[in-house]
Amino acid sequence: MNTTLDQRITPLDEERRVADVALRDRLGGGWTWLTPVTRAAARGRVSLRARPDGLSPQVTEALLGETVEVLEERPDGWAWVRTAHDGYLGYTRLDALGTPPAGETLLVRAPRGHLFAGPKVSAPLLDELACGARLSRLDDRAYDENGRTWFRVAYGGGEAYVQAALVSAGREHPERARDLAFIARLLDTPYVWGGRSAWGIDCSGLAQLFHPHGALPRDADQQRDFLPRVETPRAGDLAFFPGHVGVMLGEREMLHANATHMRVTVETIGEGDYGRRLAESLEGYGRWDGTFFREELK
Image 1 (cartoon, one colour):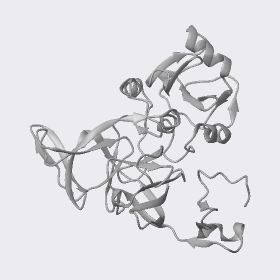
Image 2 (cartoon, helix red, strand yellow):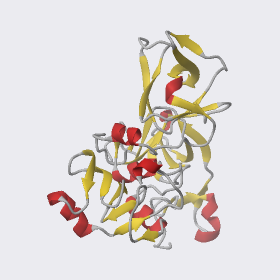
Image 3 (cartoon, helix red, strand yellow):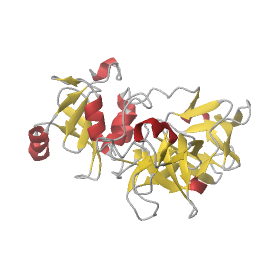
């Protein structure tokens, strides 16, 4: 086997000799070829793990309605899957997956929200929503409740309701993290290894929130290798450290999810004990070719 293949994103298991059929020309014979089947996360946050074991480390998450490809269904109820937006591999329970959103798709814009059992704020909560989740609208009616507008959406083989203020229509990912209000709502988000939402997030998951959906790889080292380097950072650039990444808010201030404080914080690189340690381990800055912040952040 070619040892340069990144096992996080290369769908093969050398020990069991199974691999994605797309790798047939690269791997040669002696393999069992797997044909991916398109599914979607059926819960607010679907955990993908390193092994088919509920106690194994979480490697990433799929948000409600996000597309995943099932490479292999196991007899123990687990599935080997790949996230469609960044190609990351992991294991999840097969019953956590469902049908991809169809018809008119609503995209969650807010960092956090909920699905409700009915179109009123006192209705039972059915699930959590995170920025980037995708919902299938069941009809074109807007449900009014004391001046609040709700949409009826598909959930769990039935229906749920979401407040219109949390979502936007369309299939493109909403513009995120372009203003101070969004950033403020992310502060103090708990640090969670493999997390991808404001319910719990890690450093590279936070970096993905600040760029177009699917534009960045999943992990910090992958993001470092993917982006062109720049000498002087500006708002929206990524700062890289050994095994860590942060989002620059200017030339020195950086937003990052970190296990030191176990939450999302803002640090000034070079200032204070922690800031000085960050400056000493800084590996450089990367820039996506685009503008991701409003003028007031520059």
